[in-house]
Image (cartoon, rainbow, N blue to C red; front, side, top):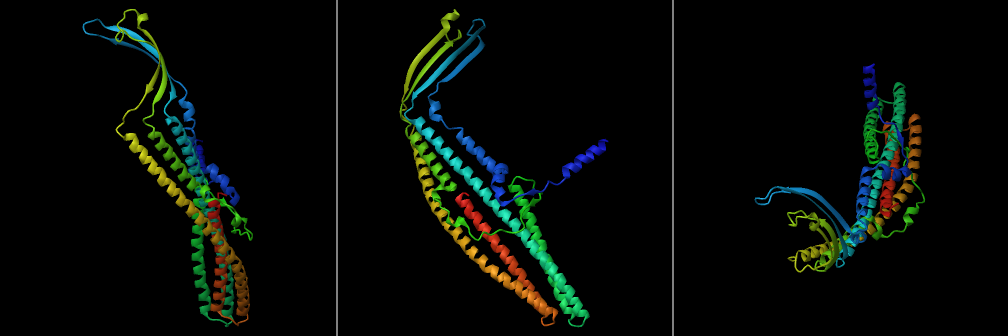
Length: 414
């Protein structure tokens, strides 16, 4: 019985993951919920948010309590043991505005982390969309090649009949056999590419890498795409916002450091029991001490350390601001390029539809003429190759259209 249990456990662990049906519209939710890189970016965003409220917290009192017992020997006196303890409180009244700029710095950090998380989400979704369309395209290509193989087998059978009837030579059969080998090679490569695309998409979606993903078998194409007319501001792209947030963070850090000289005003209070070692009063009640005070602290000179660091952050802020501006212009150009590619591919698809119909009609007529003895095997192979090439080209154009569309969706944040 024990061996059966172990065998069942091994077989269960080796069982393949259940197939998962994935549609294109399912990708955003799956990426957001299952992709570890997106989840990690979300945690970094929460980490930045945890630092918010610094200014408010800076006005809360700090409290501390001390309790201890010590044994000591002083000179030739006998060993003595004393208990000591105390309560201390401090309250910030003013720190020269440094807390305000520290608070602004935390807010800028949240802005940067939020934009970075959005950028990570968009990037992972764009890659998933690309892998999805590569997978669907590969499966469509597989169907095209399988149909071409079946058509070539029928042509090979027809050629053998013609050879037996004396209407053709052995070269006809060899022509179709060689063509079959080429198609089988193309089919094997296409199937491998589809398996790789499926594996990459599964990992991107947080699934087991051997999960079978069920998709549509044909790449879609919308004849009227509203995406070409979508409005967008390049400055709102998360990559630009991340740089802008980092620039603000550096600027506020520089302003904080620039106030190194400003005074600090604090209220402090304490109630302590000192040991005999610190207060040489025999009665314990004489060693209690309470204090309440106000302290004004002014930094006079720190060796120009804060000034140098402030200048460093000011230059960093200026550099990041310049980089954000350049990135915004590049994003604007990327949008124009993606829309141009989308329009061109859209037009090519429409032209390809007409060419595909012509290639199919040409193949049908060539096969009819081959059966009537008007055309020979090279003519059939040429027409078949053209038909398959046009089908593959049509599928590739629709795939390229969806890949360009995925680029534009990522840039627009859709």
